[in-house]
Image (cartoon, rainbow, N blue to C red):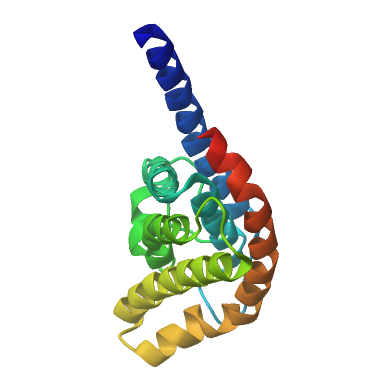
Length: 187
């Protein structure tokens, strides 16, 4: 009986570890889709959408771990961050996009905590919105430190992205509503 329980536990641990790695890879791939915007040092990417998807699918603990892995790999110098920002490795966390990056584990945790296995569309929308707000607050804080001006920080890092983020929210809600029960049941 103990062997059966340990075998199942080991298998679940392996599946969870794979989920964490796959989540980090997904965000790294999403980072490569970057569109530089005029007048701002922050490019438009698919990263926030991937972060929210990973958090919703893996849950709070595994989603946050996946984002911590992503940040660790990027800080170590592997090319997983957006290629349009010239800073490399650990220095990227202190640049104009560092606040967004550092908010990823918190945002993934928040989405995972709000989105349950059998969540309504409204609950999933609240989770995704909370995650987006947390990512923007992280980015806004870092840009405010770098520019010394909250208004300029919002002009560079929040206002240009609102419409795209609403579109990301509209795309993520039905996907998470459908996939979360299936994925979390296997973790």
